[in-house]
Length: 151
Ligand SMILES: CC(C)(COP(=O)(O)OP(=O)(O)OC[C@H]1O[C@@H](n2cnc3c(N)ncnc32)[C@H](O)[C@@H]1OP(=O)(O)O)[C@@H](O)C(=O)NCCC(=O)NCCS
Image (cartoon, rainbow, N blue to C red):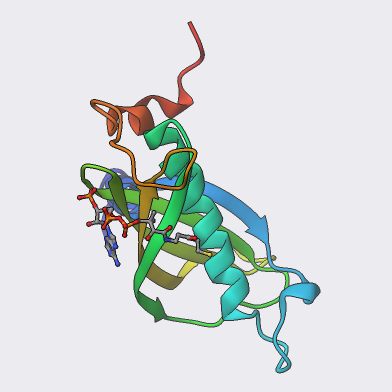
């Protein structure tokens, strides 16, 4: 059994691996499929919202989802679970932003969460006509400073 400091370091590393916590919500009965499990489409919508929120921050403007790749449903999500969506920046292109998005679910009355779905989301920064536009210079730093107060 590792000592407390080692365990704490492991947990911090695991959290960093997930990326930035972008959205946290509760799975509700209205979000279920006919079998009573949470509908995969609802989860994907939460992931799209989370990724789009960060993409807008990085791109400082309007963005569109251009691709959702390699969706992996690892475990089912149940009504009442606390669902946390984490986003990790993978690549910044000329107009595109690629992020790894993970969802973790914590049963309402339990302490720990489990990974439930993973996917890669690609967003493109677009102009008023809906055409790709170049990302701002040093766009990736826009995400780093997201928690800092305004000057
Ligand atoms: C997003 C959109 C404006 C891009 O237009 P486009 O003509 O394909 O643009 P481009 O070919 O110039 O590609 C733009 C960028 O997207 C990337 N891209 C395009 N398709 C991609 C795909 N399937 N996967 C990964 N990246 C992709 C390109 O590599 C390029 O990246 P870069 O600028 O960083 O080098 C257009 O595809 C669109 O309007 N799609 C619909 C978006 C939408 O409505 N989303 C919501 C779904 S309901």
